[in-house]
Image 1 (tube, rainbow, N blue to C red):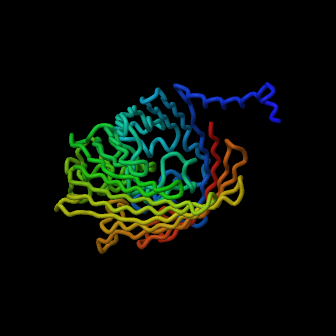
Image 2: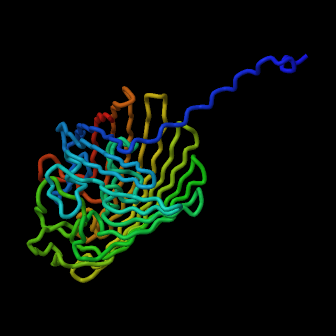
Image 3: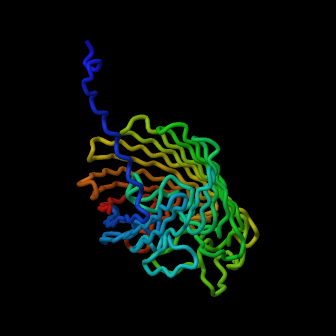
Length: 393
């Protein structure tokens, strides 16, 4: 007979699991990133025009504190936000106009509010464009791609709306002050638009674009850590003096700039990642006679987690700059370069916080554009070895 019929006590029910603790109102995080890069040939990481051919890892055979990064996140229900500060050599590269280039940067500072399916964001935030980001621990490789340094902006200051059409598709729109500008140099705004499609945890596709009137000679190529525009080249920030560049284009000249960026990522297994990034950009009125400059590039990435501590990543990409607008490199016949590179990176997670990375990279360019170590001759190939250590906190 069932004991319960005789009045035997029933077993006690299992206790309910404790609910997850709510996120802290304020959360702090960050990382410190140190690196060392060395050329393996007689070329440097500098173009013959005096500008760097690399984004962050431009210092040759010099220990480098690239980024001491501190982030504060706000989690107040529907209201969220972030304040991100960067110090080190990276800060000079990512600074928005008007920047002091003093080794310190307010990289992001924004608030966002969730209204049902709509998110409203305002302040300074990182661009939607590109497969890579400013924060090195989130990238597959130590060195940044050509596309990250020469095809897309770093940050924007303005407003962004994100609407969830369904659990898998978001549409995005907004306006901002322009490419890497805290305030617009010409009083005009740039439109931001895009969508994100995530059919599953293993697949994602994003497409984003920017269109606006930009200064033709401002921030045409990245900040120059070697000096102040020694050859007075086109596409370079000339400053407030009103000096014309080598084409006769005054700094007040402006034209419509458009960028289309597409990123697709697939995780076939939990240990494998494949990513493809395509960029195409146009700048109208880039020279004194009103011509249009274009640039485009395609990058592919593959990463495999060999074991919980070791990950191997490769990248190959090509970048075409036919008018030389983004690189400042033009051949005697007036043709800009086609530039490609291949990179292999091996990462080792010494602890959950500390990661070491070693990297080999080879660049080749159609013009003899890489300055040799003698400071006079040039080459069209460049190989480097990079070592990096970053600790997250």
